[in-house]
Image (tube, rainbow, N blue to C red; front, side, top):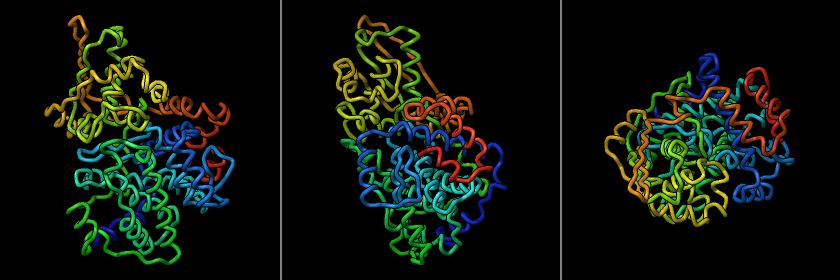
Length: 450
């Protein structure tokens, strides 16, 4: 059996009957978290660019654009809503040794396709479960980062699988959809290296759009490559190398997903939490700080610590949320790491610009080994001008799979994020609907987001 066929058959096998109660709850928490973050991103300039382009290029009247009075096609809604969920860098992440994608990149995609066919809430959970399982399995077994490919190269495949599920495509049509998506839409790692630009926060929305388009083409009869992965000049030869997947119809990979407590890149979470705790405990004054030194694992050093480009030159949000020097400096000064820390006037202020240039980031080999074993270790040392040093060490953070957020914490985060746009009554209705999603239709849910 080819990998393409294996994926297509897996999509058919998934049923909520195979989901444990814990798995269903985790999937619902992912939905609520993603919607709140998405609503909070409305008004951000790159998101508004996407909205403008979607209005022009993807007109339609049967898929909701979250937080808007207009509708769009499934393709446009997938791109718009995924841009919302992803842009703030407050979304979830799947933790694997060689790849850290954001499975919530699939949610806006699957919701758009499900709305288009008036799917049930139960069918939506199946589609999201499929996407999370494929995304996680690929991240764990098929890392492509070191080969120069961006993780949304995985996302277009996982999203196409989730869309195929809610569209109720048969095995052959699903296989065509996966073949089209995985052949035509592979993204380069240059998105997240060197000087970071705004496409970093929108690349997954592009993958979302392409996944829906591939599935719609297949559903209308377009044949795709049948042997995407093992075929001559296929995915394994050109992108990944050899691999195998072991997909669970119970979709348990969602349990390996973390929730962000802070608006910061995934690998920064432990360090940011630690330096805030240290600043509060020791009542640190940024003007007294001589040096901030972070010892971390290889992936953090590579991506946000300077391994793939200068992280001490920070002028924009896109650069700031992928710069450990900036995040640690701002977190110490403000004792918070939220949207306010990415406002242009905060980024350019003298205090943080000075302090970030006094941050060093080093890989600690033992921490890399601990990360590969499931932790997210960080040791932060703050040296003051008078020679005093303070140290904090973390092995994880609130929201890590070993310390996951419960329903109350997810709801609190949702009210904090969505509260900027939605009144309390609307938010309470969204929470109630998501918590009992299997008793509702997708249209019941998305009506509350318009």
